Length: 381
Image 1 (cartoon, rainbow, N blue to C red):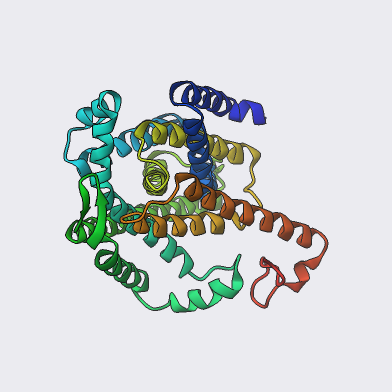
Image 2 (cartoon, rainbow, N blue to C red):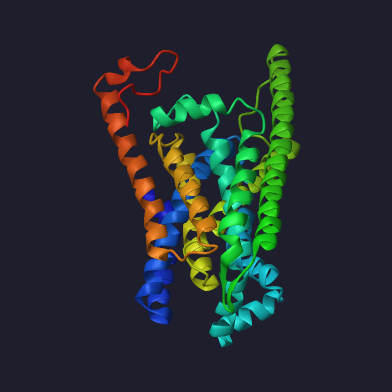
């Protein structure tokens, strides 16, 4: 089952890493590997959500999502989008950006360096909003309860995450952006940072709005399907169990694509905190996206979701760390390997905490759960 489901992902990983080492050396091998792990980690919760929704669809729409969807996910968001970011930020055409990366890497690097304050501000704000909306939301399961409980209470204040993000943008523009490093020296990039940061915030709100719209449509269609099933049962007619089709499945497909786009934003934007090399970025994120889709298929075929409940928390803490790092890198350089390992460490810590939690629950410590929370171990990490 594992080899059948992840076979293509294993093959793409081996070929991709071998090509990176042969073409660019061991540094590229390490960066591509870190990007792959980071993409898988940041999108793990996306795979779980996808599996929970995908199992409701019939075989035809599942195949559409896993074929057309993978083309959009890998070649659209992970390959085209990074090039588009560089092209827009550096004010060059996408073909010119690729040609520069191939033929004139020094000039391309200078363009990326000049565009970095805008890229960092845009990406930092987008990632920061993802982290803040997660940390301010009330959840049954808490990883770092001492931190997440009071923040969840603060999250009841309307628009708190937007206010904090804008304050962070203003502080960044007044501190780091006034002495932003470019290829021509240190220049005042405060206006650029403010505009790019606001654009990142608007992009997040638009993506979130679209996701909410499709989710509402999905709930309406599911309610209609449920009413039809109840009528069929009352009339003694057989109820089909082949899964949703037609309009309901179409809305599911659109909803899943918007979700995948929103999660790929954090992977692509976060990758700029690790490297500016678009080909390393595309290769690493593409490998990671293959595993995310394979994991989705695996969870659907197994008929169950993963029990490592803290991984979602670890992924979002990694997103928060990347957001802060991106804003800092507007002026100060931070090692790509250090940046990557921070995310990997947080994911590994959340995974270890999940394993410990599962062992405690298996040993009967689940009776020590806090009141009103039957899934959180009182003595959790």
